[in-house]
Image 1: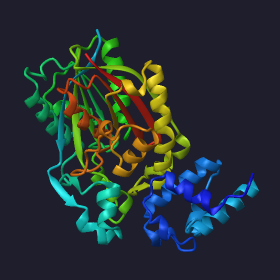
Image 2: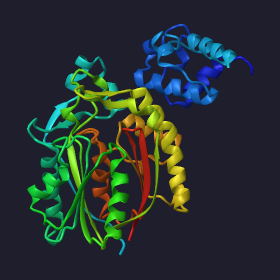
Image 3: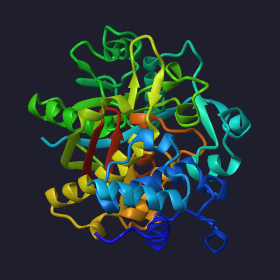
Length: 83
Length: 309
C-alpha cells in the first residue's frame, strides 16, 4: 500500500464535515488549537479507522499520537506498516 | 387481533438546569454546547421523585389526550427502566397501584436503556396478541439524574428526566411492522453504572457504535419490511446528542427535515426520547411510514417501522 500523505489525511477529515480553516491549517499544530473539539477528534479518528481498517487505541490517543496532521500522517503510516 | 399504538402521553420534569451556565465548570465552550451537544438545558426531577412518579405524571398527560376512559379495562402494564424505584419489586407493580389499575392486569418491567422503546413495543405487542389482551400501557421512565456524576461533562450535560406512556390497543393509529434487534455485549462497559458507583460513559465508544451500527440496522430493517429509504417519511433516531443525530443523517444521506432533533430544552431521556418525538406525529397524517431506531446501553440496538393505519 502506498504511503498515506498529508493530502489523504486532509481529504478524510473534510469528509467528516469538521469545520476547520483549511486555508490556514498548520500541519504541525494540534487540531484542538485550530478549532477541532473533542467530538470532532472522535469523528476524525473513527474516519481513519473506517478508511484503513485500523483499530486506534485510547492509549495512542491519550499519548498524543493523533494531535496534528503531521502526527496523524506518521501514526497512520506506522500503523499500516505493522499490519 | 392486531395491537398497535393508539396514543402517547409524556412528562418532562419541570425544573431545568442550564448547560451554558455550567460550560466553564465542565471546560467546554458555549458553541460546543449549543452546536455540538445541542442541549441548552437538561430537565431534572426532584430527588424524592421516583421512576413510578414520572410514569403517573405521563399517564395524566395521556388521560387528557384520550377521549374515553383508559384505565378501567387495562390488561397489560409494562415499565421500561433501569432506574426503577427499588431493586425489587418491579416498578410496574408500583405504577399499577398508584394508578389504581385493575388487578387482572399483567405487569412487568423491561431492563433496557436507549434501545428500550423499540424492544418494549415489540414485546408488548407480542405478549398482548398472544394472550388476547386488548388494552395495555407501555411506560418508559429512566431517571438518570439519580446516577449521574455532576462533575462528569460526558453525562452531566446530556441526560434529562422524563417519562412516556404508550397506549396500546386493537384500534391503533400506528401499526408496528417487523423489527430488527442486535447486541454487542463485548462493549457492555461503554455505558455502565457499576454497583455503588455512578454512571460512566465512554463517549468515543458510543459514538463509534452508533456510526457503525445504526446505518447497518436501518438498512436491515428496511429490507426486512421490503421498504426503501424513500418510502420513509420520518427517521426517529434515539436523541443521543445533536452531534450523533447530525452525523447519522450525513452518513446515511438522509434529508435533515426527516431526522428531527428535538431535545434542546430537556436533554436525552433514554428510552423516552423516541416516544416523546412520536407523540408529536400522531395526528400528522402526512407521515405514513416512520422508522424508529434506539441504540445505547448494552450495547444494544433496535429498529422498527411504524405504519399509519
